[in-house]
Each structure stands twice: as structure tokens, then as C-alpha cells.
Image (cartoon, rainbow, N blue to C red; front, side, top):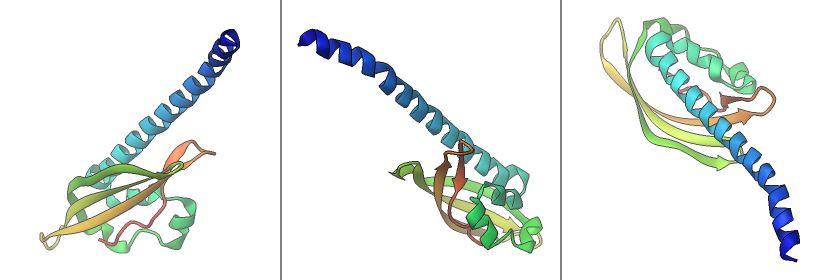
Length: 132
């Protein structure tokens, strides 16, 4: 009986190990995506953030025309990514920005929902980006 249990454990160990490695890769991918999303908003151009949306959300509305006038000056994670389902996480960030022609600081409370797309093995934002 002990021998059978030991053999069963040895056979199942690689399965659990592979699953743990897959979960670790998915978590690493999420962190890279969140960092890239932040960098796109802060250092690239805010309109580039629409490239992170799921196709369904992206079809609802494209970037507004005034984004060339927006400069993001702060991006603070208020609530770090929290899993809320299989392949779904939410996080909350505060985005500080100015319209370059007015230089008035404004703040967005951005509640982000990210979903893992198994087909492309990428994370996509599953809710709209708030209006600047």
C-alpha cells in the first residue's frame, strides 16, 4: 500500500510542477504587461494604451481625439493586482495628468480588469480606459 502511494505521488509530481511553472509564467507575463501598460501611458503616448484592450472592448470605442494634448505625470498603484477568477485580475491605480495647453493637474481613478487570453498567451485589459 505504501509503495503504491509513493509511486502515485512520484507520477503526479511532474503534473503539479508543470502547473506551478505555468502559473509562474502567467504571473510573470501579467507583471510585464502591467509594467508595459504603465510605461506606454507615462512615457510613450496615452493613445497606445488602447492596444492593450481585448478586441471586444476595443471595438466599443477608440482613443479620444484629445490625447495628443495629454501628458501623464503620475501612475500610482493603489490596489495591487488581485485574482478574482481563473485568469482574471483587478487592480486600481491613480493616474495624474495634465492637458499640455492648460497645465492643470487632474486625477483619474482607474479600476483595471485584466484577463489572460489562452490563445495568444497574453494579458488584455477587459474594461474601457477612463476618459482623460
